[in-house]
Length: 182
Ligand SMILES: Cc1cc2nc3c(=O)[nH]c(=O)nc-3n(C[C@H](O)[C@H](O)[C@H](O)COP(=O)(O)OP(=O)(O)OC[C@H]3O[C@@H](n4cnc5c(N)ncnc54)[C@H](O)[C@@H]3O)c2cc1C
Figure 1: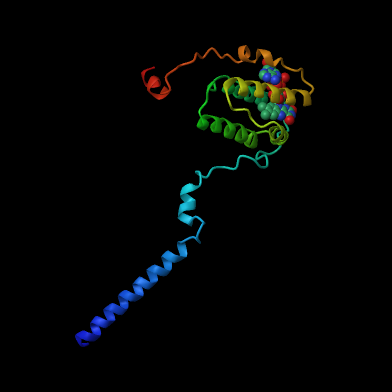
Figure 2 (figure 1 turned 120 degrees about the vertical axis):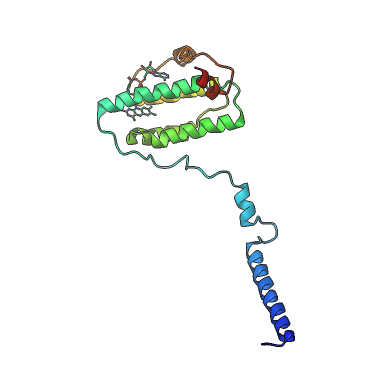
């Protein structure tokens, strides 16, 4: 058995080594002065999400009938979304609509349509400041697609009436509770 003095010194030495190891590890995570540490950076970063801009994801949609049916349904969803967007949206709601439109474009199931619509969005980014702005913007970009496909121009002054789905404006935000009782 080792004398108590040696045992004690070994213990102190072991503690010193552990402390040194911990110090070196902490130092490696510390950012240089004026810069955020990786942990601070991770805290500041917004929740990572899909990339809003980039190549169209779906393949080419060759079937003309399917393309037209899809288009009618898609425009209906888009215009109705704008018609039911708040007149005074919060910053979060504005960001939600902006992201939605961009992802709608990237993932649109007709690849060649998405590719072209991406160029339209690059030139005319979604207007999300209010319901009226979003609706007018939707009408305008639909007209750009109409023009390209040699379809008649839609009169955007009528956009409010055209997409009044008759759904009614429910003031209560908590729709889940209402549905339970329905
Ligand atoms: C984002 C997107 C991109 C597309 N790109 C292509 C493409 O590159 N090539 C292709 O072949 N097809 C494309 N389509 C489909 C195309 O736009 C039409 O939906 C399809 O050709 C059917 O046309 P439609 O004449 O039935 O009327 P749609 O254009 O589908 O319109 C449906 C209805 O919306 C109303 N409407 C028309 N114009 C407007 C407007 N400006 N604002 C509001 N309401 C309006 C009218 O009542 C019309 O009957 C795209 C669709 C979408 C949603």
